[in-house]
Length: 279
Image (cartoon, rainbow, N blue to C red; front, top):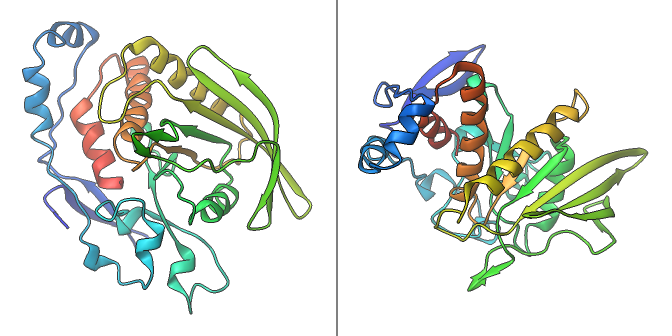
């Protein structure tokens, strides 16, 4: 793995990655952003200051792992990956594996999001186990099912289904202008929870959205839903196909909107470095 991006801090026996001085701060005011939008070269220079952070497949020596990754070259950073709790995990490490990472939010708040790949046929059960285990109140899906090739399997039922002992019931489907909101009920044992599934389809893979306002409305609506959720809920799950491009842009936009509101400036470079460390 490329380590140039990482510094490490030890806190109560745990190792946490920190942002390297390489990712020095570049705060921008709204006026700066409007001015520099016309000279994108300045943003490109900042982008190329960010070291790459790919995971070496040798870091994972788990038999059968290939079946659980949508793309063989895109693996979760080991330090921040989500581990599924499984009674078989000591004898079968594969049972605890999912291609997903915890992502810090604004002001480096821990585990605000989970970034993950679009579920495959082989990982639908794992995905719902993660949703339940992490007490996630919201899923944000930023991909079509197919974009030339399959980008994500349809992992939710039309009305009702059971995945790994978790009953998923679609209660309502609400079409908005630029996304579809599904209100779902999850049941396991005697416990029942509500889940909101936002499906945004107008963002083409490896491109930018045609317009910013629909994306910003999605960011706002998801954040409002998160604030209204119960106090003890877990991270918001965000995925596209690989769980790095559109997923990262959505999370970065959410973080930067909060920073702009609270501080009057945005630090795109530092935020992107933080995301690269986590995913």
